[in-house]
Image (cartoon, rainbow, N blue to C red; front, side, top):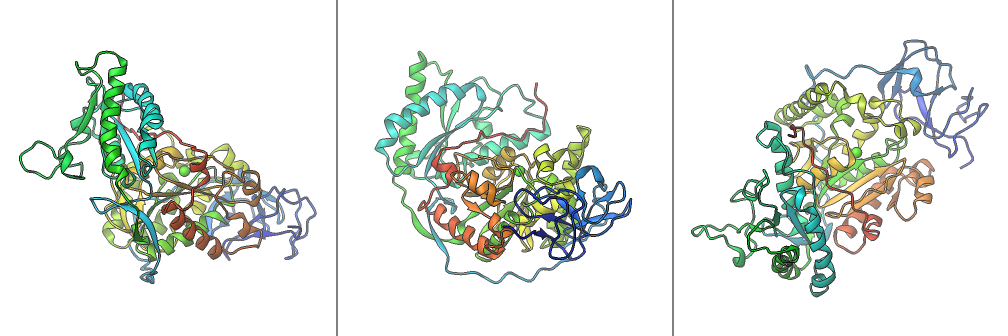
Length: 524
Ligand code: CA
C-alpha cells in the first residue's frame, strides 16, 4: 500500500487513524490535502482539524477525551494529549429505546455437531475430568497422560481428554456471597456441550468444595441407563467421583488406576456419539478481543459484528462480554436492550462491577495495557468504542451473570472481566461451543475445551503470525476486502470448524491456556 491512507469512523470525527504499514512521515500529504506536521505511526491518530485546548476529541462519533493543549491539524494525537472523560453515570440511561428492526431470518445454514441429551450441541467430543480442588491437579494430569497414551487410541471418535484444572476448592471463604461465582463457573464448565453430559470428578476428600456441593443432585443430565443414581426412581445421573483419600487407595498407582477405570466408562459412551446435521442456530459463540490495537475497532471487530448479525439472523446465540470494555458504551447497550428488564440487568451487572473496581481503588481505566497504547489506543473510552462493535446491531435479548449458563438464544451480554483467560473461562461456563478472538498486537491464545478462531486486525500481523491467525481482517484496511466479505468468511469458517472439517491453528498446535476462575470472594 503506497497511497497515504487514513480511516475515519464517523462523520463527526476530528481525528482519524493512519492505515499505512510503518506509519507516515512528516510532510506526507493525504488525498484530502491534510499534511502531517510530524511522523504518525500506523494505527495512531492524526488530527484532521485544529483542536483548541480543552476541545473535544471525537472518534466513533464519541468524545474519547479533551485536548490537554492545542493540537494542530496534521499532528499525532497520542494519549498524553488526551484527558479522559468520566464514566457515564448509570442513572438516567436510555432504556430499550433503539428498537432495532427485527433481524431478517437467515436460513439454510447447518453444521455437523454432537447432539446432547439436554438438547445442546457440541462441536467437539471431549472427555473432561472435573476437579474439586487444585490439590488433585498433579495426580489428574499424570492420569490424563496415561489415558491419552493407553485408552484414547481405543476410542477414535473421542477428540481429546482434558483435565479441568483450576486454583479453587480449598483455602477459600466458600460461604462468602461472591463464592457462588467460582463454584457455579466450575459446575457449568463441567456441563459444557463439548463434554457430552459426561461428568467425572476427581476429589481429594478433605477440601471445602465437596463434590456434592460442586454438583448438587439434579445438575448432571442422565446420559443413559447405565449411570442412573441410586435415588428411588428419579431420572438422575449418579455423581462419578474418584476420591484420592479413599482408604481403598494404597499407593499413588492405585489412584491413577481408579481414574483410568472410571474414565473408560465415559470414553465408551462418548465414543458411541456421532455427528449429525444440525441448524446453525445451535452455535453458541463467545466473542472476545485481546492484545487490541486501534485497528481492532476498524477491521476485525466490525467484521465480527457483521458475523454476529448473521449468526443472530440464523437463530444462533452470540455472547459478547468484557465489562470494562463496554462500560463507556453503556448508553448504546441499554438503548439496544430488547426489553426494559434486559437493560436493568445490564445496569445491575455494571453497577456491581463499578463497586468491585472501587473496592480495589481503581476504575475502568485500569484496563488499558502498554501494548494497547503502543497500538494507538489512547484510553479505555477509545478501546471500548472499538470493542463494542463486536456485538453487531441486533437487539440485546439477554444478560448472563458471571458463571451462569446462557438460557436463551440471540445476542446476549455475558458479564465477565475483560481478562482474556477469565472471560474465556466464563464463556465456557455459559455454554459456548465456539470461540472467536480478535487481536491486533497478537496473542497465541487457545483453549483445550472449545475451538478458538483467531482474527488478525492487521495484515502485517497476519503475515508474521501466518500459522497462528485463522483470518486476516487487515485486508479491510488494505482495501482488498469489505467488512461484509470478512464477516461472511468468518461465518463459513465457523460452520467448518464447528463441524470438525477444519481445525483452527490453536487446535493444530494444541495451544491451551489455563482455566482461570473469577473469584471476587476472599481467600483464607
Ligand atoms: Ca479480552
